[in-house]
View (cartoon, chains in turn cyan, blue):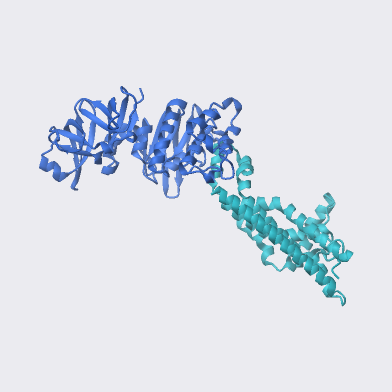
Length: 232
Length: 365
């Protein structure tokens, strides 16, 4: 009864891979956007802020459909990527990772931005007077001090990516072995007459993964708090 | 040698200052909001002036007419913040070596070991800043700035956040930087004692302008009178020579033609010239040499100028026998009852408890 079928195992593995790739690939962009929103003043800042947060407030299906329009094979971005770099998103697991990254991005940016805003800018000024230029200051001072935010943001993004359903299924459908994540598999199983046992097994797996992520997140936050307490 | 001529508008506040310093300690003095910290930020390069120039050792760091603005990391100007601003994620040793790492090898004039030794921070090297006391943090901050071998050291009220005891610990260290390392310092403060002890020259800022500039004695004596400073901000300076140290009572005797000045504590070896800071509120006037009083210091002189308005208080300048003068604040009533008028002989009484090592600056030869 508790043995996962090969198809279910594939869905679990795929979900983990998609969530990990979505998180790691969006981290550099997340840091850049968070830093820009926290520290720079530029025209269109409000627009960028709104754009980043849009997936948080839009129905996921709408986000998925917009991704389909933009990154689909005939979409303005998708066609260029496919022709020049050979990168295809539509109906591929990479597309699922893109959808998950977009959905998790606002959570990631928020966490990192908060931690960058909490850094006393005079520390960066001090580094400047000691001879460190902007890039060195960023690497040696800003980034290490924002580390707790980076970790929390990554975990939030990972959790969001694991649970993502609406945008993914709209953008890349639910092709077993390619784009069918745990969520999509559970939904599929509940629609078939004999699917209850499978749905239950996958539900237990996703509860276990979610609990695991929570435990890791708690541990990381405790560690970060202890580090920060050391700084005070 | 630094020359500064800067204009900067910050909202409704307008800063327009010009001064120069040819080494030693130059003090920027003034109340909060007078533009001291903005001046420091402009010199360090943390803020861009609207127009003006900064020239350090002949090199233009800022020259808006020529479009020159050297970024802070290329200026090689050290900055000590009021609240240390140590990097919390690095150890004390890593903090100290931070600037050194960015200093070209050929420019590293200041060595690690002597600085650690002088500042007495050897036992802290492995700790993180979060575990340090305020005084320890400030000593590490001074060391960190020094070890980047700066051409000029800016100190923005480095003692303001410390209690009196910590101040006493760090003031001599700054004196050693001035006298031994011979690093030019621009020292921001609103404490008369600190400025008088450390600086030879002072620039007084008020509302973003240079209100006065010159030698410390002139600025705090005559200059402060013209600026209408309150009696608590008025002080005079008496130069006297250390005669002997009385170990039995823990006092130091300074000789001056007008009389003997007694200090609590030590002021260095006999024969040394000292500048003693005397606040106007610490001086009492008497028409005869006192008897039956606990005051030990009575300096003979004549009444010079009397600054009095319609208020109850006046500031009296007492011209001392020999050289120099002291300022005394007294009530107008007392002056009338003692019949003190310019030219009358008078004794200036100074409580020894008001004079300790803190009030003494060594006069550079």
